[in-house]
Image 1 (cartoon, rainbow, N blue to C red):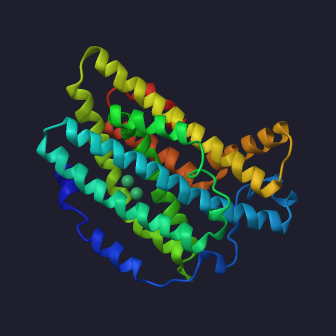
Image 2: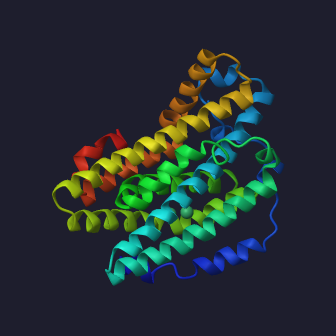
Length: 293
Ligand SMILES: [Fe+2]
Ligand SMILES: [Fe+2]
């Protein structure tokens, strides 16, 4: 955590610069097939051009919304952690992480407002399910350690997603690619914080409290799965205009399956997390082996 505290100290400066930068919208460039749901599957060729474009836009917006949601939950969890602990290094590292997540959320919200006109009427995640999200926030505030491993995985995903955008738009940098490249520069360092925080927290807990910390991590993963399915089903309804429950469910599972099994940044995330588990050997890591299967 010492290393995290002293590294990457120009993050706030970069975000201030980015705020004043005027870049073209990602949607002014042509669609990138590899970043469009169902690419490289038989379903893709069956979609119309209009549907492919709509899925492309929806998936970008969904990524922005999902990141904002996770960052808000993480921010609240880490804020609660600071009030519960006295470890000066943990507190300093946590404050740094919170500041960075705050800068990220603001930039992603600005992106939704400026580049996603559909966000006002169609939100895939942020504007719905208040009770569900409040209970997720309650879990984060009560058991901040629950966020550590799932957040490390989402943060790893943001790194690989950012790299995919960097490659796709190397010749035409835009608001979305630049936002995600700046984001990955911070997030690549958050992953180490999460594993260290997990270990530090678990080492302080005994007996039932330790069991609850592990159970809360599983609960947090469950919450994220529900968020993911909610987002997928809303994207399906918005793009394919499915009307029956069965049709929506079938396409939701197909879309979820594509993201988890076919989408390159997610596949890279899985193997990265597997390597991290093998090298860092987190306590009770076997319990969470399914995170990279
Ligand atoms: Fe972030
Ligand atoms: Fe982060």
